[in-house]
Structures are given as structure tokens and as C-alpha cells.
Image (tube, rainbow, N blue to C red):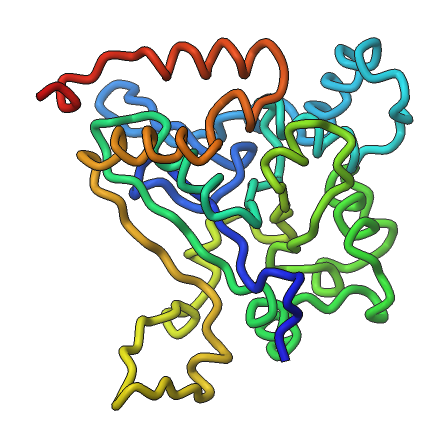
Length: 274
């Protein structure tokens, strides 16, 4: 029986349907050198993930004095919401929030909404034994902290989570609450989520037969679904979201969000004329 106060799904909106489900800290850049295409890490070529977080703590501590400088997971969560490259990928429980981020920018590209069934995903990782933490008594926060601090503590990679972990953070930042934030934290694999899973993990729309929906093993095993949005619909969707109270002012509390809200509200778009 489903819990009526809990959502089964998480959502992620992306402005370009070609983008991968991959945290920013693991992204690569391609450069041309003498006719050769060279691929390098965008952020980790000259430093480590831990040093990036430590630099953020050093610079931001004066603004967030209540956070312990050694609480790496809280600092990494905050860093993620302020544009610092981390191993986190943002998701939300609110599909309208995901729709906003899918349509807010990049009008030249089709967008995508990703949907993740939480229960089926957790069952999948348990069924295949890929997220077995040491002695199965390691909490999500303990596992993430080990990855963030590069501290294996004599723990083998095979005993650490392989697939990304999903969890809801403490909402100590107003943006997290406004955006109904969840995080997907990468484990020992450093590739995109799509490249980790098999084709059978994708959910398929199954029309009803004689008005009756059937549910079998396929429906309980699959956990990922994507919905594409044509680029020509982005502006219209943004106007509709604004009427429903989903806009920069509500999602980014503070002066920055108000400024973004007013800029978007009065931005001219030729397709709306007529």
C-alpha cells in the first residue's frame, strides 16, 4: 500500500535532452591540440574533490558560522546549491519545480524531465547487491562522508556503494526547502547514471486494456522514465508555471530570486505576440 503523504517519484528537469545524468565534478572537457582531440577532467585534473570542498568551507565559513567546518556532507550540500562542482545531482519531489528548471533557459534545445521511482530503485540496488555497505550497517551519511574526504579507512571499494545513493538533506538553506530538494550522491563509479543501468530499468508507458491497468514484474522492477519537451513549448510553460506560483522568486528566496523573477516576467518573446 502506498503512503498517501509520500511521493513515489523524484524528478529532475534538464534544459537540454542531450545532457547526461552526471554530477558536475565528474564532467570532462574536450580540447583540440595539434589535430588531436584530448579529453580532460573539467575540475579534477589539477585538484581533488576534497580540496574543492575545503576551499568552499574556507571562503564561506564567515557567511555560515553555524556549520561545523568538519561537517563535509553539510558543506557539500550547501556548495551544490551555490554552483560549486560536487558529486551530488539535484532532484526534487515537486514535478513543477523540475519543469521550471527544464524550461527556464536554453530555448534552442529540447528539454527533458527525468522521473525516478524511489522504491523500485532502492529495491533494484538491494536485489543486485550493488550497494552493500560494509557489514550492511553503514549509513548513507557515513558512506558519502568517506567519498567526500577520500578516507577509505581500510574499506575495500567492493564494500562501498557502487550505485548513487538518494536521500533528502536537512533544509538548513531556504533554497532547499523551496525546491523540495533531494540529492543523488555518486558512489564508487564515476560515470553517468544512464551508463550504469540496463535498458530494462527504464519504465514504459503501458496503455490500459479494457479499462484495467495491469501490473507485473516489469512495473515493479523499472525505475527510470524520461519525458521530452519541445523547445518551442518552453516559453509557454514558463508563463503557465508563473501563474501557479512556480518562478524564480519562489524557488530562490531573497533579492537574487526577486531580480531573476522580474527579468523573466518582462522578457520579450516574439512567439507570444499576436
